[in-house]
Image (cartoon, rainbow, N blue to C red; front, side):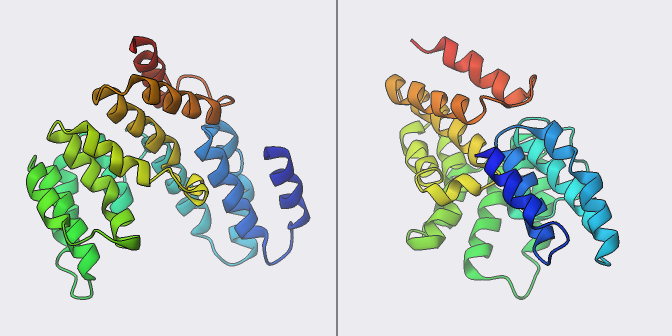
Length: 239
């Protein structure tokens, strides 16, 4: 409920929780495709950064919003260096394979990298180099609990590259099946990815339902967003 979120946020102005409330509000707006409204919060967040001796808050938030736009298909929104595995996945979708491979190689040099992160970075590198089966192989140990969910998006991409949409759909479904995952900034894109996998697997009825769930989530989204435009065309083409 956007109105309820805004009401609660107003109660937290000038309190220790103001920063968290603003960032949550901005994240929520991006998740539902309301990027223009989210951008309107940037000046308030910049002012908060000044007041709380956190001058980098505004620039970091602007970068985060640009990454969210890239998730929605605006691949020109963010041109800064890749800062996380999630962002690397987005850059892969934007066709920036060399940047992604270089990022993965750099991360793999870190001495404190966990086994799970090592596996995902290796899979990311393999995907960037168009080696999907290699990505599947290195992710094989990550098959339980949080590790399985962590590996799921990369495993799903590999299956799609291998023309195995049924297996990809199983992985994408893990990323939208829990209510808490609706707070993920990639949640809307995950819905579309699942719909595409289901459609490619011949499960038209489920694909339509999944597209419709996405359209409902983005019913008030900004016009002209590439992800929405592509999804509408794909939905219309289903028979």
